[in-house]
Length: 220
Image 1 (cartoon, rainbow, N blue to C red):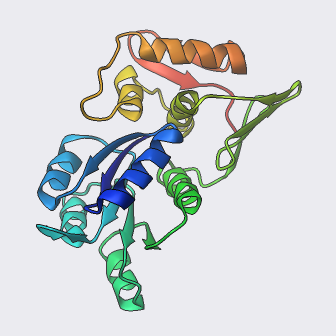
Image 2: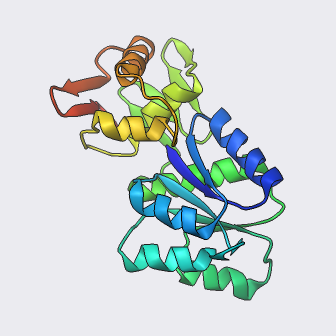
């Protein structure tokens, strides 16, 4: 998915960004409240990782404006504030989860996937696509013939389809999950990854709705 990372600390920001990129997510990293607010209102993100203390404002103000505008984007707060009152304030402002610094990057990844599943209307960590068992958190797929291995970007495309249960996902929505600001979008990238997924998962798993987008089939 496409993630907005709002963090002014260079070291932590780079670590989180690199870890998310390695997991197949596209990441836009902003270090000020002004840039973050502009990005959040310009792009449809799958998730926002939000620091509270920013050099030009508060992350809570950004969150409050998003919720006031009825923007339901999932938000995980990342902060050094470890007081219960601070956590309550963040959750009451509309955050979906909360991590206190320093935190384990693998735990962050697990929380990102969990929040994303809830937002997509499916809190299950294991899904079935026909006779395939897909463990989203572990990024593991088992077929009757054995384990299926996907690359980070193949997972990103598959999750984009799985998280929109029963819906047709447009090429633009998939591109937004794959690319961050400044990335050059190749015209046939989505088609390439859909083709790769079909070869690995089975040609009947993903259907094309001509002129509209793609849909995962037989998901339970």
